[in-house]
Image 1 (spheres, rainbow, N blue to C red):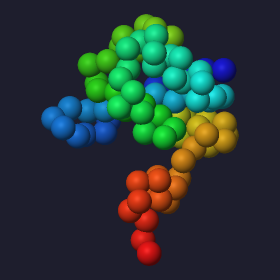
Image 2: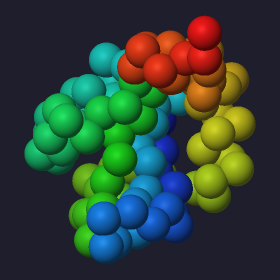
Image 3: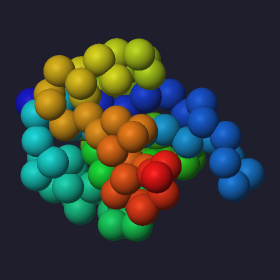
Image 4: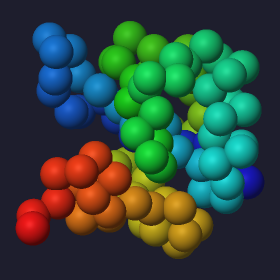
Length: 96
């Protein structure tokens, strides 16, 4: 059971963003988020979005730094991955 973080490579809102996931359970992910002060609003169905300035502190708190590709592979293997189609449907913007 591991919490993973990818490099801050995703641009938005004037910064770069990382993703924090669990390779085993959402409970583990939410517990880590609670311990490290990640706000609930940063949760996006299967991951937390975190700004670049939090990356080092989250690694220091126990998140394992991996590549983006490794993060996605392990998220898929965990069964927790939410596909883009599922993500759109959950937001009500799926094509009709």
